[in-house]
Length: 232
Ligand code: FE
Image (tube, rainbow, N blue to C red):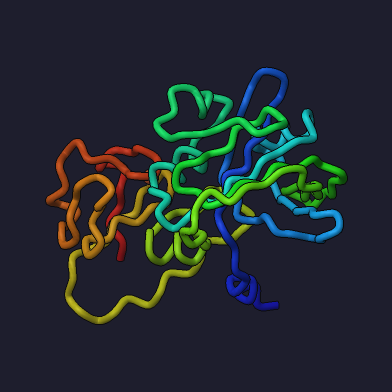
């Protein structure tokens, strides 16, 4: 069996949020899709280790904020590489969010729509649970194109949380030209590419890793420079 075949499936990127009594949490998910139109229902696959999983099972409610292409790595990192067990992801947030009719938070910055849904069934899928949920509310927030997983990985050079259902995409074969080395964050897997720089943090394209300020940190997980390794 060639499991590389699975790399050819396409996905979006979403913030799935849930609550449990007075607590709120959200996380990045790539597996959200519409299942039927009557009633409108979606399926959401969530890793059993995640706090959001516990919250969805407790409240049977969830929201999906659909990320747009402009979503910065910092926003994805905030929901994808930090655990709600350590800190409330919505407390003191530097992004805007609103409250849905069911009393859940959804993110309104760098998203183009949100969906609110009520869980009607769940299926054990090994590492993950697939929640089937009936859509109870939804709104379009902007006309910006949705962020796809491929766009995130190839254009934004983003990394994949360990609890995502996806294997890491294979690295493209390096072109045989002399160029500054790429460096990989050993914490989250983000790749610093000198040709791209880190424009979200004021680092222009063409900046070698060695020339980054000493206080520069990983745009996704906040790791310091010494936690990066040169790629071959
Ligand atoms: Fe990182």
